[in-house]
Image (cartoon, rainbow, N blue to C red; front, side):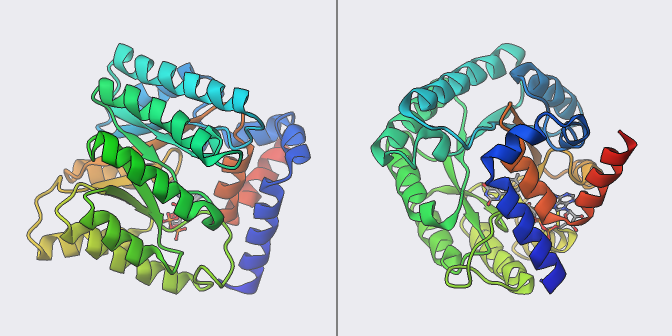
Length: 311
Ligand code: FDA
């Protein structure tokens, strides 16, 4: 990463963690307007409407209720209720989709046992409905705890109902990918959205990309159904080429992308007959998610500024 990009990325990631700014940001109409490019809306029904459209265009989805700022046990219970309602709503409207869940939302930073109990409730309900919960991956201090919880849930509910996320930015990820595959756990592979130090992650984007490709090959060799989550055309074409060399059928894995990013590429892959899942976030607490999307691509900041001055 060049120094200017690194600096702007660090600044945006720093801002993403400032709670006071979040309140300010949610009151600035121009920012909210730009955020709508990446977030389906604040209400569950906004996400349902977006999902109906994506399903009609041949994509499946993963709903995500945004809230990384739970402060106490009572708030974690509200998150569980939201996910139980969401799983019910998915069935009611016949949406083709599952859910993604963050363990901090379940109270991971308050008490690990609480997070496991809360996540368990969501996965149990998903299993009862024949659905699936993807446990998102957050910052590296919680990587091990997150994988421990996924393993416990996988032992109880099996690979059809719960899966993990790994980030190719981390040195440990190739070993994690091999271990999880050997245990039969399905993985979403992404590059990693959080700013990490050189003691745990590659500082150079080229290394992150090469590790993505190494881990992709581990996943495709495993015989399990995984998600290759990226908008990077090189990662996608190398994945397709490797799948072809290994003689994998279309549908042996899926591509995953974020709502509002590279819709053209999503459509193209669907047209070519590849399964594509779109991650659809919604909720009032959109600020940190939105700031990570800005940090990924400094050009997005110009988009914000343009909208700000246009009012
Ligand atoms: P890269 O950042 O190299 O971007 C490749 C191209 O994609 C860019 O050139 C641009 O065209 C486009 N692009 C990427 N980001 C963009 C943006 N914000 N705005 C506009 N265009 C953009 N991370 C994590 O740490 N934990 C998780 O659980 C998840 N979950 C997850 C689910 C899904 C379905 C996806 C697709 C991604 C995640 N991520 C994630 C985020 C992931 O780690 C990563 O930060 C982003 O996907 C961006 O990386 P790319 O692989 O797209 O490559």
